[in-house]
Image 1 (cartoon, rainbow, N blue to C red):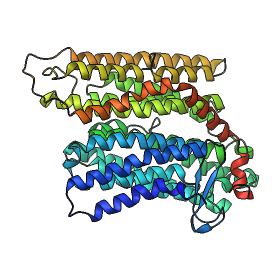
Image 2 (image 1 turned 90 degrees about the vertical axis):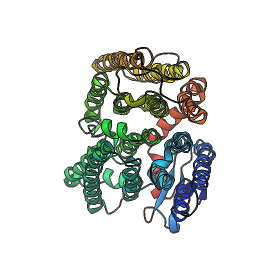
Image 3 (image 1 turned 90 degrees about the horizontal axis):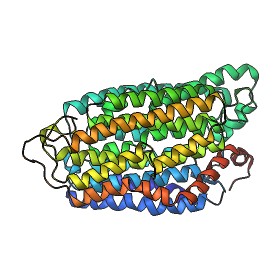
Image 4 (image 1 turned 30 degrees about the vertical axis):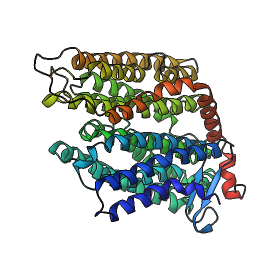
Length: 500
């Protein structure tokens, strides 16, 4: 067994436990431990990415129980990619938080590490029950992180977030229980075999279980009509928490890709690709709803939250195509949207601190103390997330538009994507002009931004440039990732004894 596979879970889990037990230690010690543990995930994720890039599936069998028994971790190209983007996003977020934001409440760094353990576990697990377990770990941590800093708005948003996710957890358990009762297994690779060979009489119940899981993942991923919790929740969170939350919706989308290409994929018999017909209209409606919400926003952080919804719709469109090209385009756009959106949440916090009591409200306020620097960062992030050249958002949308075959679907996708890009450009332009140009006559009240906070923000925003510079090797990797996901034979061999 390759023990490296469990390190992305053990490292933040161990760090979180030490942070909880070291309550007598000062904040500098907690910051140092949290920073070291989080930044160590980056080289670890790169190592696992190189391991996964060989094309072989790596399996870690806890307790040395052979699949489908026991707990199994699975590393393929997709899980390695998600581990890396999580590590990069989390590293810059915790760096930003360590400049004073972590003082707003107790145990910030411990909760941050536990959430990372849950996120990484969700990407690595090879069975549905432990996907549920890791979902609960990351959700419980996110409940507490959402309330970090106190405030009535955070409590109100937190209640909605907790109630909806508890409902989702209940539905998740029901769906998992149905699958276990019908197949006797929850190992994803074994489920793929069992569902494909299931008795036709069981097909309706298996389909019902699959649709229940789709509802759960749609709630986690903020897909229409289950996205209404997201804007207020993300806008009320502190900046580093909101930045880390940029990966949270991607976990729901990851689960959709994993479950509905492997378990309910091309080898599922009468249930083959049963959700694709649903994903296409949901993606278009989610994208359109996100743009409408962004245009109606009168608060910068709520505007950015709706951009998360837009990215969800765009990503889901690539998945809904059901092709390697569509999935590869979605994965490239996932990298772009996660990192750039995280950077914009951090930037919005810096801007709000320099606007006095007006904060993130899009109304006239005192002039910023550093308008040129912050304006340049906002401009770069805005044109990138709106999908204009020469940044990564443009490349991601071009790849998506090229992936759709000619026909009615192409006409719809081109129209929705291009019009939504125009809508995002209008919303961001209006916000930028209000923040940077339409300042009041009042004296400047904000302090200069902390240089390390600016560096952490710029690091995420400039990832868009890095994705363009390294577009060729990234595209090669994500195309291989999409091909691996649609080649189910290697996954089925895990159960048949073909994987190490």
